Image (cartoon, rainbow, N blue to C red; front, top):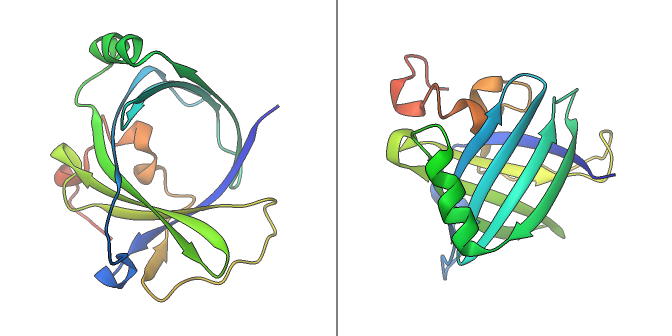
Length: 158
């Protein structure tokens, strides 16, 4: 069984940026998107994935991710609710722990979120200086909600 445990933070300044700044372009959409579960299709670079995630409880949820052929992922994205979530993901090491920085574009332009995956919910992680407000429990920041409530439409942007 796959369990995802993560914390999310707004990014408050550009000091996180690695010198080479090479990221992975991603497009993703949802075939099922409700409170209890999501079924996501993602293209990351030249790879396709199908992911099933359960409802989040605290900072944890079940997650099952499977590689699928790129062409299948392209076709499945056509079936997903629009707009798709578009972003570039940068992976950086902070004190021996990998952080993902997602720089959104399209209807979520201007949103930059940092995520760190944990081994357990009580794991202590040193928060980098460029990480701002924690948004782990704020459902507005779930990628699945950015389709129906894109960042560019928010009145109160943290």
